[in-house]
Length: 255
Image (cartoon, rainbow, N blue to C red):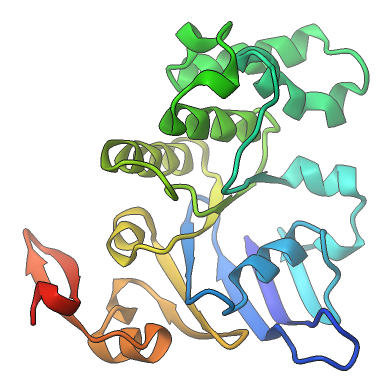
């Protein structure tokens, strides 16, 4: 279980708190979605969790262990990160995924590392891409490879920053499907930011809605009400139900 307790952070000594007492819990195999307007604190929350920034106060625990007290190598064994903007350089797909094993093998990959990469590529249906230049693939394919690279670390927690950003509809659904499949099959906790509320409801189990550096609302799909969405995003919406699922319509879609 990931447990964040009363996390506080600011970039400048006398500046405003960018994270202001953030607390959340995420169980094993659960997908949590962090939502909020730009500047609400989502990216800063991730940077603290990943060890890029150090919180002023509060705790970040995984399975009861203090993430803040861990070495970067130990934390990398627990948490894998997929950024929004992905660059592989001039690497083949196989080598791009293998690079995530560096913390394990140091300067030279061993048979176990090679086997892990082959297994991940097979599980994600990427074997045919193994020898392709990763930079030459489509956005959706590159996103899948980035997730495969993260999974090769054998993490317990996968952090995704806007994984469907700049993808077409088919690839958005592909990435959401892959995330749900990995969580269910491997028991991995996933913490992701998203901008699309309907995608969030499709992908997530638990939702954390942020505003002004605080998590104001936490829960399942019941947190998606017109009043809460108005408070967080300052947008008027209408919510309908289709085949038992909530659909959020905004602006002219219902006006």
